[in-house]
Image 1 (cartoon, rainbow, N blue to C red):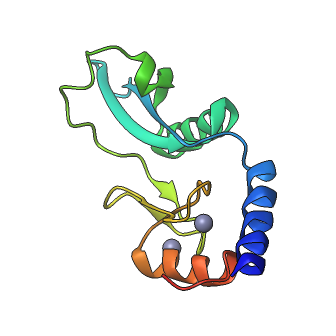
Image 2 (cartoon, rainbow, N blue to C red; image 1 turned 120 degrees about the horizontal axis):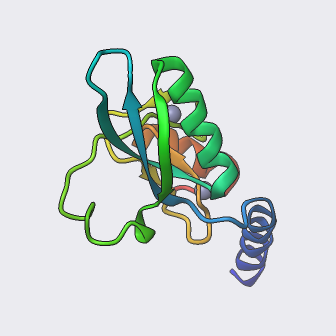
Length: 135
Ligand SMILES: [Zn+2]
Ligand SMILES: [Zn+2]
């Protein structure tokens, strides 16, 4: 038992080093200027730090032909957004790399792991592969 616990800690700490930045909920505001009237929209998404958020926002804006007005962590947006249900931007599944926006991401049940998944199946496979254990 002791031996098993030690090995688990080693795996977790090596993941920690790679993924020191936690996933945060971000909000982005887009402007659609294609029509005569500018349409403003908001989306929320998960990202690991500013650069990932920037990448996510820019990729999406380019694909959808939108202008980015601003984006920031939801916790820094004040109370304005906590009242609203914001449509989610696509996220990437850590395990299968698929894009999804149909639901809240499934987060890894392992403590100290920040991975997120499109489905429970992907999370289970990830846990068996990476954390070497069954739930
Ligand atoms: Zn997946
Ligand atoms: Zn994990």
